[in-house]
Length: 535
Image (tube, rainbow, N blue to C red):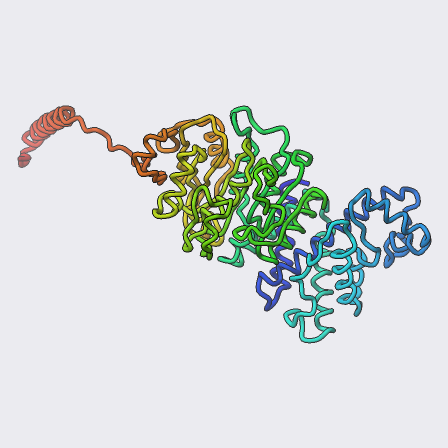
């Protein structure tokens, strides 16, 4: 499928969403739209695998337009169903009963069948509780099919669902539904809904341009980035994973089999469900990822609670885009928390360093962490200065990358990327000022591929360039009281051209002589004509 086709599919789906959501706000309708798209993907993937498994026994229902092949097979061979489902679990890691497949649901919608709503509810419950070997309870918990926003009574809700599902079915019928295509469409819709929900978007969506930068950095060899990407990552972790786009970008960089397992944590229940759907929809098997619903600041994931350094879970790569300057409530005992005891506790007014230190604690010695933060972490005083100073003294901050303003849906402020490592060969700090390299947009600025490539190339090869990048020794940073404000180390001012006064004077004298000669010549003509001379 071409990029143009993918864009067209995204536009088609967005047009359907925009047309059908009516009085419902974008956030609410997002949950319905993306859930239906997810069901379509699971069903198509499953039916493709079923067709391959059954081979010649796959029923031909061309003369039975209202019957799905799998439902006919279930009717004809009921005694074989248990063994067949066991086999499909081994092949696809999940099963779906024929009546809960998208093709069955879409047929109910096409005919405005009164049982659609109840069947859809049963389908969602089945997928949550029985389809997968892993637990996906609550996967559709934010999709209220009995909401009055869909209609005042059962009949109107059922009819509206028939209309929505029918339009989606028609809209995507002519497009491929492989993981790359539908996965990209899903990401596109998340981005479109994020744009429509303004400030709330920061809770679940990192723009793809920024995801690309972080993911391309953390997959590079930790000790020698010039050598390129690592061959394999045992695991990758995002402590505030949102809809999972950052994690999926890392997977994209490493390839389908380049990561052992993906881990994410997300506090918001709606976004947590989005992330789980997003993983499956991009072809990540349920055994290949684990997303935890919880609060990273409280460290409430049992897997990460062990304080014994020899037993604690550690990660090859960590990416994060936490909420900026988030207010939190550290307690007295927080200072003794194994994540913060060495560096200190972030202030109540801004948890930026709390998120950073949480992730950094779980980074392997040969791992790389990249985190998006507001510029304030570079220069604010008090507790943040002490944390920053200790991280610098321990030689853990590898690079500071300043980005343009207005890249996010949720805020117009400029942000930076901090790259951290536990074992660094370099003893200097790379500063990159990419704040002036972007394409200006009406609502948002954009980083083009060449802007992203320049950042990665500069980081990977530790290049220095006037007004763009510089490697700074720790002694100079110490003299600046460990202030990491990029403008202290990279001047963006354009030097004024030096004026050669002697040359300017000579030019003026020559100009004066030329004017005098021209005036004399002109007066000679005027005298011949008997006219008044010029002064």
